[in-house]
Image (cartoon, rainbow, N blue to C red; front, top):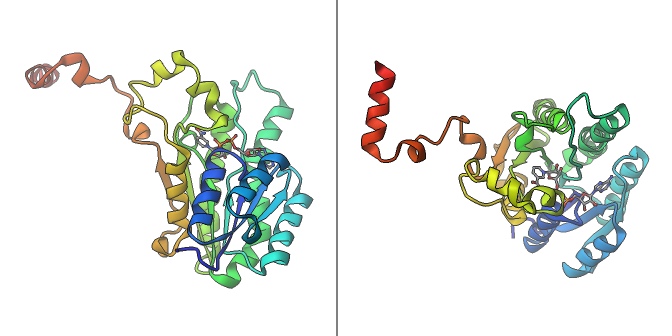
Amino acid sequence: MRFANKVVIVTGGASGIGEAAVRRFAGEGASVVVADIRPDALERIVGDIGGEQHLAVEVDMLDPAVIDRMVDAALDRFGRIDTLVNNAGMGSFGRVTEIDLDHWRQVMAIDVEAVFWASRQAIPHLSRVGGSIVNIASASGIAADYGFAAYNAAKAAVINLTRAMAIDHAPEIRVNAVSPGLTATPLATGLTGNPVIMAAYEPVLAMKRPAEPSEIAGAIAFLASDDASYVNGHNLVVDGGMTAHTGQPNFTRLLGGESHLAGAESAVRR
Ligand SMILES: NC(=O)c1ccc[n+]([C@@H]2O[C@H](COP(=O)([O-])OP(=O)(O)OC[C@H]3O[C@@H](n4cnc5c(N)ncnc54)[C@H](O)[C@@H]3O)[C@@H](O)[C@H]2O)c1
């Protein structure tokens, strides 16, 4: 029970990766503050994990005053905050020339500004108990995707904000990020539910499948736990090896067995 007597806030906790993190923390003994914009889903999940020990808070992470109330509600109910998981986020599709300023600002507001503000409000309380922050960034924050301009920019900002907070606020707290690759959640159904897209993923996904949300939750829980007591400022990429690939063609498949590879090597040397 790594999180017995600990209090964990998970934003966007009513679906996907956030929900899996909620279930993982609750399963390991934490009192979980489940924060989300969707009251129905919130109530269902908090009921599922055994209501009494936990707290559902309806929030719109776009509103800083509402984020303040989320932090206050956690303190009022439990008197402490050990971990903040900044998970709520939105996707975005479009090149720079195709998205407008309102869309850009909305992506930045939920994917970056809310991380900043929730962290700012929680850090004094986390510091009192030697707590930690886990930010959910993305593999899309470490390199670019076609048509994901705002999302790429936002998630890269989250990764470097993680590092900045990690050095500024150590040793009182630790701050780390998890960067998932393609994960089977409602956010990603436009991709995982499209056979053409999934066929195009085939040479890219070394594991030959998207992650399950619980596989991301395991990494989140690790970073929040004492098992990671000296891990600070780290961006833990959980993408099944997707970004381990340079992007070069699959030589094994194209050139066949070892003898062909040897031929290719000598051709390169010539
Ligand atoms: N699914 C993926 O492939 C993937 C990959 C990399 C990173 N991520 C990141 O993981 C995080 C979680 O995504 P997910 O895939 O679980 O998505 P999801 O859509 O399943 O869950 C997101 C949750 O955030 C909540 N939310 C959205 N806007 C909110 C707001 N303004 N205020 C409060 N709550 C709000 C939603 O209600 C939902 O419950 C996001 O930050 C996302 O960018 C997802």
